[in-house]
Image (cartoon, rainbow, N blue to C red):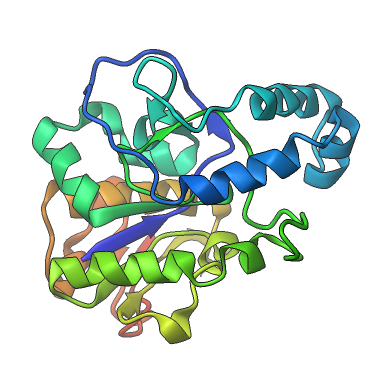
Length: 255
């Protein structure tokens, strides 16, 4: 069972004492190509491209200029420990044991606009580059075209190494679009999380994001290997809703 999630815009690069174990991103040569193009942009260009404030644009201008391909534990940080946001608030990596981190390294992948795909302990430098960013690089019109089949091929390899064909999609639509489902050798399961509001169950973005993180941790910490075990998920009031669920889209509701 392999899980995919999206990264977060918010980062935390303060020093951590959780682990000194690390790995390196698989597609660093492609990241270098992207950075070379991004370094040509001025802060104003970045603000327009990413639709962000001048302050954030200048911050990311500096990040692109300072980015290093040859990262070390002293200059970079493991991906799972670097991202902050609702999904990662749900994951609560600070509570992970060494065994949890080891398991996540084999069973979790983080999709990324800059790095393509990351293992939890891959070292990354601070950056912001959402997968939906419309930037032309190497004759490609956007990042989906730039990454082409690389992300899907990497996922297929990881799934094959685990000996099953189960992919748990807990990524956002923006990032999941980078996966070519027709070339994916896996049974894709996309859990949905809904809250009861105004007389009906609805997907409320901020809650659904955290729920994706909660389920990620549920799978990793409990070492799940069978699809039926997903139905046992009951974090923070969510329960499996058989009436609303489909085989490839289990629904979890609360309220």
